[in-house]
Image (cartoon, rainbow, N blue to C red; front, side, top):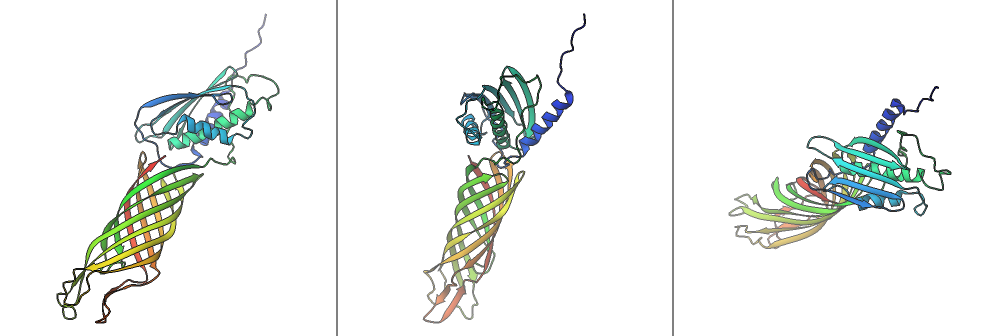
Length: 345
């Protein structure tokens, strides 16, 4: 007596599904890379038919954050759905891409997938899209009969046109500064601090930043004939606020910033017979810059900034009574900053 042959999954379909899944993982947002080393924790939650075991290194998005994003992504959040159990294991080694392994249990059928991504955030965002689509495909309203898929059947692929989910982070940076023309006899050297909040959508990252910079004592050598004991010392302190927009390319971000700066400059210890010391002026400037950042390790990165400053007024330093001018702030000045940045989710 002959027996009917059993149906086996097509190897071609399995390979095609795996490739599609891998491409879906690298499409979402690429930003800071999660910390590469840390304790691993498994967290379980079960909102509306989804049981998720989220096994990832420390610093990756939490299970609660993934489930919240799934909640926001679903087309019909309150709709009843067939239960889905998902186990996700994420692993990263220095110098290698993030590796993710997913195990799906849908209506008693178990399916496994593996893929790679540039960041742990990219892994999490891909999982959000996959889980959302899987839940929609297995909703009771859209599935007329509880028919189980054949073993090895491909999971639903993420829709490339689906809107990504907004995410946000905080950042802090310390930088060395070189000023050209804000202070006399350039270059002048100083340091700065900056920090703020950023919002990421797709390949775009928008940020609102506040900063402060300080240029300590910088000497102006004067003509000894005109100015006895010819020297004058200046310092400059400024605070700023800027808005930035950057586009993300793997580990790099490039974009412009625009804002305003409030500066105060002081001259002191001239050593001259004419009294110039203890003279302070304040002014407001328009500041525009170009920023390039490079993620080098975990949540750490290096940042290079080129900035142009245009003062709203040009204060004069000197002795008004004697009609002697030591220095006048120029119409345009430039600065370069090189800093180390740390981001916080």
